[in-house]
Image 1 (cartoon, rainbow, N blue to C red):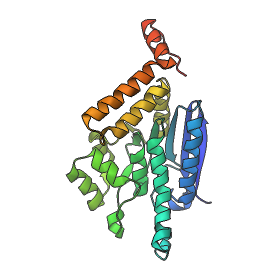
Image 2 (cartoon, rainbow, N blue to C red):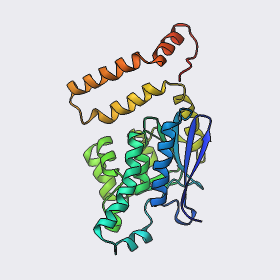
Image 3 (cartoon, rainbow, N blue to C red):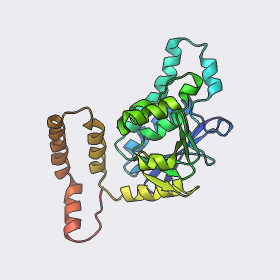
Image 4 (cartoon, rainbow, N blue to C red):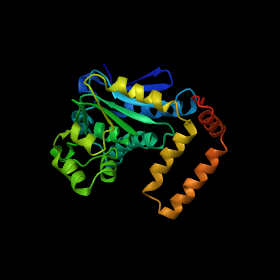
Length: 259
């Protein structure tokens, strides 16, 4: 069976499942391209309020296929760069996607699989999930934004330990550090992610899009610039029909009906 990214809808949530059973859900260019296409379609679909990325058969993703990477050593630097750019295009699409993206992690999230989970807005992981950045073990440096995500999420020394040490990181430790949002019983990560997505689906989509953009821009802005950006988002959202509905629903003590 070839690698594929399966797509399914659960109410207002799109679930993207990495399926590459011969290689422990290793990632490849076909999956990257399918991921970008799926998110572009979900952005246009007003019925989709959030996206979950998970892996088939109790595994998230083992990252890059080392046999394929060994073969790619014979390619030119330009060809190798195109392959990495394909992964980075998917990561960038996730980061700029205006709706919540949740990683539901069972089993291993290794290498680029770990980077992929970190690119998501939330990580819900099984208590038996395994996270590892093993690049340095095979003479490589990370891709997929793993260094950026960990450097922004953790103190420098912890990021260095995970990236240079290349040892498994206990999911309980990642949860305590705030990298993993919620822990699930084994086999329940997807169900818990769907339940969380349903909660997010009760929030105003335009407000969630603003929050994602503001958080994404925060570290690049100084406070003055960021306050201006918050003001502009606030005014735009206050004028949106969803603000009228949300405020009215709160005052009337009923559930809001956002569009």
